[in-house]
Amino acid sequence: MTSEPPVLLALDLAGTFAFGLNGALTAVRAARLDVVGVVALGMITALGGGVIRDVLIGAIPPAALRDWPYFTLAAAGGLIAFALSRRLHRLETPIVVLDAIGLSVFAVIGASKALAFGLGTAPAILLGMVTGVGGGTIRDTLVRRIPSVLHSDLYAIPALAGAAITVAAVRLDVYGVPAALAAAAVCFLIRMLGVRYDLNAPRPPGASGRRGSPGDDA
Image 1 (cartoon, helix red, strand yellow):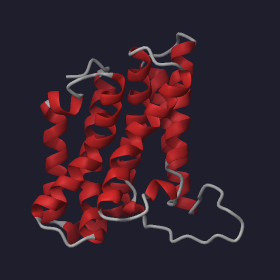
Image 2: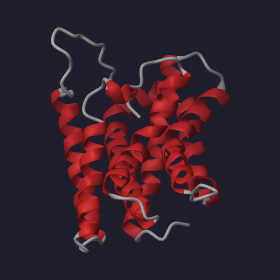
Image 3: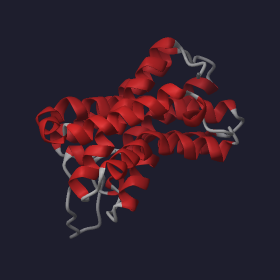
């Protein structure tokens, strides 16, 4: 298992489950897939960003494949979404909150792990973001949609903010549980403000894009 502090590890595992759940729900809504397809897309959403990060930094095999709780929770989230997809629509707000927690913790842990493997400031921030949004981007590509991270609410921007604060804390030699939680809290707050007030990153003048529902994000 990862050497992250217990608090961050617990949030990381909760985020993995939430991403698996949310990713599978998106698969149910976007495509008519069987149980294998739904669970697979849920697992891709939950684990894809971390796998991309680990492959790029040379942490082979990826943590998602070495540490069974991640794999198990991602699969469990997908199975629950498949079995209870109609009922889970009523719990959309709690799922979005868990999803935002997952995004926040993934961005922080992704950035800190990239730094631990010797990457510079900018690449570490980028990989922190990729850890948070990479799985959902792969999922959306597989179901032939424009990735929700490119058009829905504030998603990549909060991840970048959380990763940037993490990198700054490490560079200033003040990184620890309080700093990590603060970075995750900033990411979470920006994300939830985007959901609550329907905020989006600037678009070209005159452009109008279809905005996905909160459950469509990954």
